[in-house]
Length: 638
Image 1 (cartoon, helix red, strand yellow):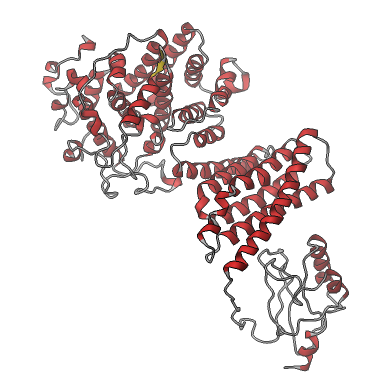
Image 2 (cartoon, one colour; image 1 turned 90 degrees about the vertical axis):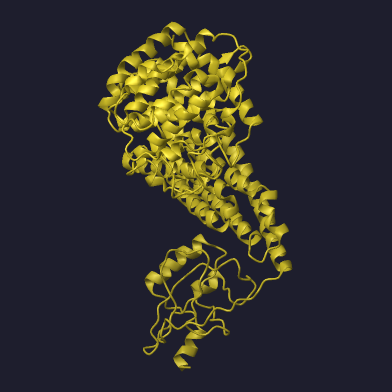
């Protein structure tokens, strides 16, 4: 070895370059327990560069590999004799200052790192040590956050910085705990520890959420520190999503929550706010795909939907209409109703007349207002709707689904005596769980005589609004944009047909003749009648049936549970950015589904009066048959 190199191995320089010295001091001041190795003497025949990286906690601090901050700065530390000159010392956490140690040899030639297997005893001891330190740090964070939450005292810059460092360290400890306990060599008992100790909930509650709330109540003074922590927490959660995939649904929802905090505190740059709103919407949608039956996730999406009244109302009602409803939505939904019902100026100016009428009608229903006011707003909405479906063109493909879904919830939540329609539907779903072979098989069972009395006045008006909206849609036979609305409405009707007691109450409001007219008139070129007339419209073969945009809107709602076969969405993955796109052939698929659902409705026992209608649908595209007038008319329309 070159003598100059040997000399450099045992001397850590007193002649550090100015920029290196400055960066080293910054790093040493920021990371007190961190040690750095460097060499400052550079003989002419041994050029090199220096990189300072934070040492990993995996190294033993008692080993001679570490040197104290004072020794490094004073130049009294020596190069470890067991490391060859030019060895790169790397770490798990980069400092962001790019320096590297190289000799005059080829820098691409490095020895392969030596890996030593870790025993179970060592791994258990490591997890115990990490958890012990984590508990102490967590206790300190909880104590400080609780005190600051109650006192609301003003903090100095140094206090903010110390608080930020404390919570960053706690997140690092959590990350280390997950890495150690979920190590590939860990035993099953060790891998169950994160769930047993409720670590995902603790990292969110004590490590992220409480701290963000403390900072939020001290805005704008805490803005810079809050933004810094949000970006750091976002990075840690992204790392945990990869290293602890067993809790992927939790990490994804947490990523959406953190992104929503970043969106909320951005007041000056509207473009930046929209970017973070889109990021939060992306992660919440991913979480909803993993847990479609949980109403909490549509509630989060409703918050991001402002100021779009249709979309807000859709997500809020879906949160209450899911298999596992999120009951806190009963309070949150008032943020949509109250400003419009009170004619709040800024909100009213941002909405169209038809949106105002629709939200007011549902707000009056939700808050048990005067039915005369409801009738006024619902009639206004219906009168504007006919012009609106043609004016907004393709936008109504999405808005029509939102409107229909909100209407359906209003119908289901109405109470008749001691039981709501929603309770009745839930009882049927509980007694007839969805089958994998035939998701629609239970709809052919015999009818049960109705024991219900006529509808209450409120339910009568609500059902009238729902099917008056549907009537406007099916009258637009020249508009393909109404097909998504017709599709979801027929799914809802088929669900109610499985509860004859309910269907007997509302069938008089359903525009049966208009449905037949619409299905006879729409363009059915390319329709596969073998699929329509089969027992299953949605086969398991992913190449046969694709997901439609409205499928994701219906997914998770109580009235769509028997429509989709098990694993229908899992076997047809659709990218988040592409799920709202209209692809070639989707119109034909919608027509096939509508015809299939109409055939199912015609075969249900409690609608036997409509049973001859489907026989006149096949093979008659774009025209109404001459024999339509001879079709048996439902008794409710006579």
